[in-house]
Length: 161
Image 1: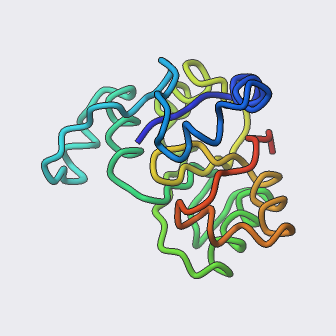
Image 2: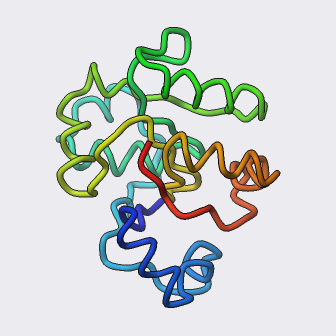
């Protein structure tokens, strides 16, 4: 999986008409991708946990189809935005994995520093950053959330939540 970039990068790609082709896999991804060559073997939770934070991020994004970086856990969200994201994912009946950024501050730091993610939760689908709660809400209101979670539709521009 690959992280395309933050809001500014996605806006630029969208304005240039390149975003849809990149998401569809018919165009090259910009150089800021984070999960370009994750080891294809089955990584155990222990393997991943013992990696340096930047490699751990690549492994997680590459391993899971739908991955939510949130404050807290799905069972115990630690803020309202994380709770809203979990509720929308549950409503969509999609299987997802979650990472508590409060428990993995080093991973949170990598996301913030290298990829300009300033707020949480943030959702990755098939290795692509879909965005935060506002982006999920927009997709839901437009009736495109289920398709986006399945990786069958171009995501909305990433928004800060």
